[in-house]
Image (cartoon, rainbow, N blue to C red; front, top):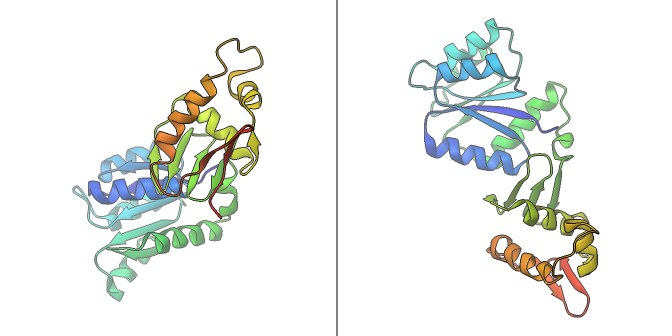
Length: 229
């Protein structure tokens, strides 16, 4: 199961950036834009970790963290703040926070700190990826039916998703049209076999908008997911 993270930040740019980056890393992400929304979220769902902006429209992250701890919410809290003095950090730690990241932050450092906090709380970060297929910068989440390439979400139909999933189960393997028909459309499919070519074309227009192209035609054989040597 993916670790669940609650992002509490009222800046749309930062919130959207975090959602995209954390989903790319395999986290399940929920958001709140203020203290009231965050309290509602933690009252109705469980989170493995909370990213908490210090400055919110209706409260401070410090006060909100104190409320979380008073509610016996034990999820690690990582503060996002533009203030990084020792005094500010001590106040945050005294309120029950676990770590600080200063804005503007590096996403790689943020994710590394999150995983460190999760490991300390007994969660193995390697388990986050059990429902994901990864090849290069292409990620497919089997459980959530989400696809990302180069950190960008790709919107696929159910059939396109199934076709890409089949290709990603064995990168570099060449799948014949009959194999893809059986795996994606089922052995009872009675339509035109050319549908495979059509959907490969659809996938290329969505997945291969980035370089290098991954979906390749092996003439006279079939199709394969691979990277150039």
